[in-house]
Length: 386
Length: 132
Image (cartoon, rainbow over all chains, first blue to last red; front, side, top):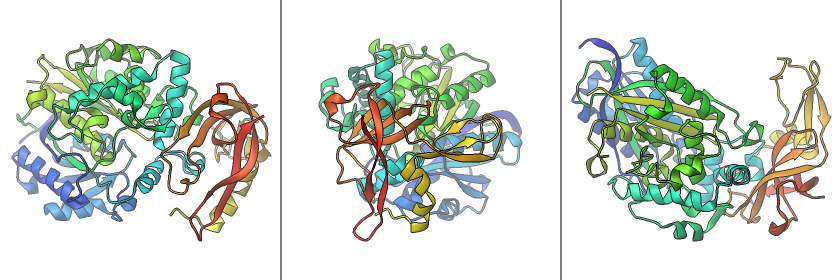
């Protein structure tokens, strides 16, 4: 097959996300990888590069060298390696696969995102995840990820009058979306009152403002060969970096890396934020979805809560956000999340999202994947060319 | 349990125990936490300076779900404070009642135990902040 300018989705698959006590890292990655290759309808030996996205398997599973581990399970002998950018590992892996395919070196790259998180205690998981913050200047003082986003939330409340109820509405929306996703960690409705009454984790954030600790894997086969499977291309993907620590940012309520990645991605696609029909954003905590609305340019800084209050980002709104259930309800197996976002957008754009398929014409979809408290951000724009 | 080598802690004595940062020899910009490379002028020459001074509270969170090693300090009050020179840092607050926490609260540093790394681990000390 001839090499085209388009980088397209050839195959995709994911495992269920959740507390999967009977599954380990290897079995999750293998299931997602095999099913993505099967979905792509190509022979395994046509995969000429394997990228494994994962954040903390060394601490969580005592296993590193994931490229080789997964390559062996799939019977691959092509180049294989692991990409880590904390919670943005998946987005970064897609981003790197995109440019490797653009270079023409490879033709079919398998990207597998995986995280096995439930084999250690909650405090150990919390410690492992805190590794995405600045170890000396944040984590040493007991900082955890919920508390970093809590510090940002409190400042957003002070400056822009955003409320705990606004944040609760984000979780309620994403849980509703999760009820329609058979792969989601949580598939049940919650109420604003339930969120507001849930136990405090890091004030003002409560348990139901936080994405869960999940196991799971998601995989895509990306290609630069012509393929007519889904008719979805990645038109642009941009990754940028900002300060590791929240305290080093000029404005605590802005994820600079998202602002710059989004601007570059819109420019490379030749579109504006108003052209986006659907988005998957990084709602690791409810406040993060509000920040995403603003930093992606859907509304001006400080007005993020207006979108959730007015139902704009609901399934039946003008700009549906997190139809997969987002990190909150679909679950957040760290390395898998950014890959799952791409799958959700591709399923929706190609009309393959099953009972959660949006009932309107979709042309452009956006995925935003954030690492740490905002030090890494990847914004990818997908387009249907059906 | 999270453990650190004595050398790692010894290396950090100045920063952890005295809030000492650095000032760029060339453009005089002050950094806390310290840096290796001046983002203003590109210099790599710095003089160490002590920042031990007061500041104000910018944002805070009462942390109930804590990291390994912090189980004895629930809720752990973590905060971002702005020192008098405008530098912002992440820290812990101590001896402040929740009802007194507010934006702009004047705070001062105090030398405290940060956490104990298990039964046979090292006791970590450092600076926390309290209301002035």
